[in-house]
Each structure stands twice: as C-alpha cells, then as structure tokens.
Length: 85
Image (cartoon, helix red, strand yellow):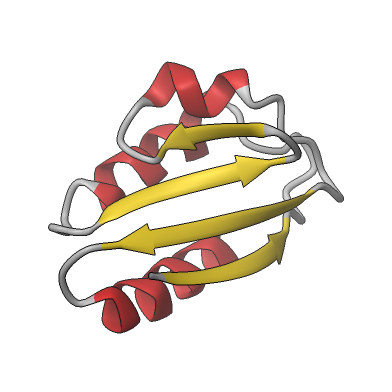
C-alpha cells in the first residue's frame, strides 16, 4: 500500500469537472485508488462518491493506493493532483 497527503488548492475544491478528470485518470490503473477526507472515503473511479466527500479548497486529503505498480501510480496521481487541484 502507498499513501500520501495532499492539500487541495483549487478554489472550488473537488467539483464536477476536475472530479471527472480524476475518475478518468484513476481508471488508467490496475491499482485501487481511494480518496480519504476525515472519516469519509471514496474510490477514485466513482464520480458521485468523490463529489460526496465535500472536499473544499484548503482541505487535506489522503490518497491511498493498493495493487499493482503502487509506487508508479502514487507518483503519477500526485503529479496529476498538483496539476489539476
């Protein structure tokens, strides 16, 4: 398992458009990717679950990755978040 924390910088947090991009990106991997905020958790391939986390600008999330190529996946997902969130 790989995990890292990330602080959301996008003014409106994880909303429909970037959440859709994250879902699309997460589907590229064989690993399971989870986004955790507080006591809530969502699979990164489920758009409504991601949006249901209510992640706002300045919130810290934890990204947890389990499965094949975890290290590579974690690196690429971190880069994706830095570019889009």
